[in-house]
Length: 166
Image (cartoon, rainbow, N blue to C red; front, side, top):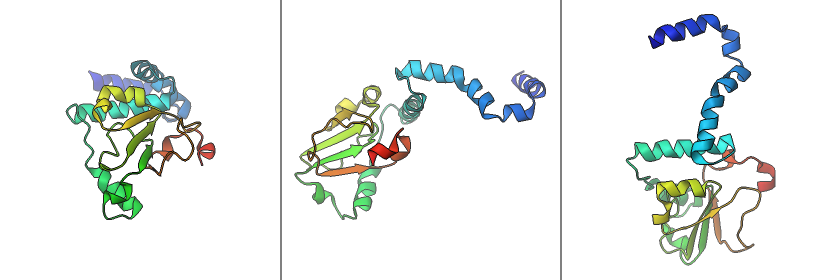
């Protein structure tokens, strides 16, 4: 039945219309409204990011895993172990809900900075031994010079205004 409906739809709407950006945007509109409402965010880009994390959370059995972060961050920093974070304040801009800095066990403080922190609470970030700060790229609510090590991983493509961030 569904395949017959799709075939009929393809015959009614010309292919060049189906491929247009406007047509695709109109078809996505109901889903976009639903995502905004579901996650309590107005911005569709943020709503889609929240939806991505919800799917990850569901697919991983209700617990987001994070063992890969240590190797990634050590590789980026070109360090052999986590001792370079000992006694320091380390922050991750665009941290996501996985507890990206839990590997830095001897850091004085581990701060996750993300615009979606309120959404991430549904994924259990309260259980992480980290401080989570809600922030966008416009203004980060931390005092100047309060962070010794600032890192980011796969976050710059999610910011709306990259130039002020730099």
